[in-house]
Amino acid sequence: MLSKLYTTWAGSPPDSITPILHSSASHRRYFRLEGKGGAVIGTQYDNVAENAAFLYLSRHFREKGLPVPGILLESEDHSAYLQEDLGSLSLYDQLTAASFTLTPTLLGDYRRVVELLAALQIRGHEGLDYQQTLSKNGFGRQEMIWDLSYFKYYFLKLLDIPFDEYALELDFQAVSDWLDTARPHYFMHRDFQSRNILLPNDQPHFIDYQGGRKGPLQYDLVSLLWQAKANLPQEVRLELLEHYLDAVSEYVKIDREAFTAHYYGFALLRGLQVLGAYGLRGLVEKKPHFLESIPFALQNIRWLLEHAYFPASFPELKKVLELCMQKPLPSATATRVAPDHPLTILVQSFSYLKGGVPKDESGHGGGFVFDCRGIENPGRQERYRLLTGRSPEVIEFLKRESTMDAWLEHVFSTVSKTVENYIDRHFDHLSISFGCTGGQHRSVYAADRMADYLEKKYGVKVNLRHTQEKNWPPHPE
Image 1 (cartoon, rainbow, N blue to C red):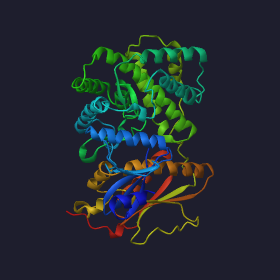
Image 2: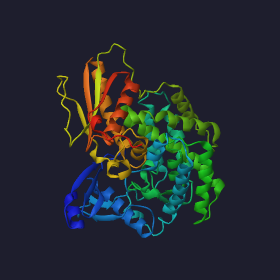
Image 3: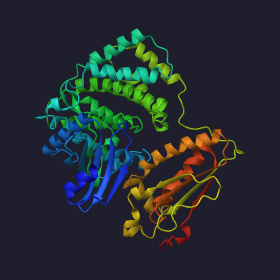
Image 4: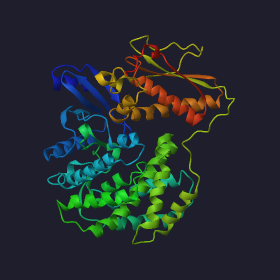
């Protein structure tokens, strides 16, 4: 379907269609299609209503001059569409590359993002037909109760936290009744966090707003500033809150005191909702990177309980949150193996053009083989051609200008399941190979990262081999 759409749009078929790994919980599938017409992003998803909402919102926002991808072509049944390729570098990728240290450049990015958020919410609201969004009634009391129930069933119950069901429901009603008084309502993105903010040419653009609806201004700002793993310092959150309110004031009159009172309430609501999401993804679906975010979310909630003012006491909710903070949480870190454990892992890089996939000499028939050729290639740029995946300049490129680190998160998660199984069963060998065009840049960086990850997480013996090292050009003086 996507190939047919590209051919219709560009006048010739695509030369390549590459799957794009996406970190969201959605079952939507993304691909990068490249050909004579250039690169575009193709999306396939069977939820036609959600696709239709995204397409409508995208066109509406583009007409308003707002920073979202342009829609190029869609199928008649709305199950597939092409959109402008904004690259793969997200604000979250920039945070990761900076080891979650808020550099002056990143702080500038955040300032620009909150300015554009105000524009998206208020200018995007003008003339928007909310009957074409997924939630026709907007974000109100019922939606808040659903979020709070998500926390109850996928976090409290999964962790076996004791609570009085009736008392907790009364607190949920009190929270939602209070937050439902927040006004005014404009467009609400619903999942406005750093992974959904792309930075083509250092200019923020927004994606994944298909769940958008009418709602309170505070919610999206909270989603961005209180994103658990981003772990923004409180003083930065305060600065960006004021910067956002200044931006909103350019469009509409705003009661800052009333806004701020509800703002902290929505921070609590969003914190509980994401704990439910982390419980589902981490505890039920066994995805370890979601478990890693739980302590950050609880840290946010602790700060709110200690410093924010709420007009009601929420006694049962506060009690269960204290129990959550005291209870040992499931760890995303595996137990390190004993020094005499037999498992040895061979990690290697190779070239698809110069030798192909290395033969497994262990007698076990091989292991994982990962193709890095879907990652942006630094070797195409003259300044990197004589360098390797171990050169600081190439590492910086792969971290900041490619999807490599985000892709490796998925690879680590996939490999970890097998490694833990092999450890439990006392197997003695596993091979993990990364290939790219020349075996010099992308595969080398990926293999080095994998070896470091396995040694630190499991303490297993790792043999690292770069099959093309003898062919690497000498490093320029």
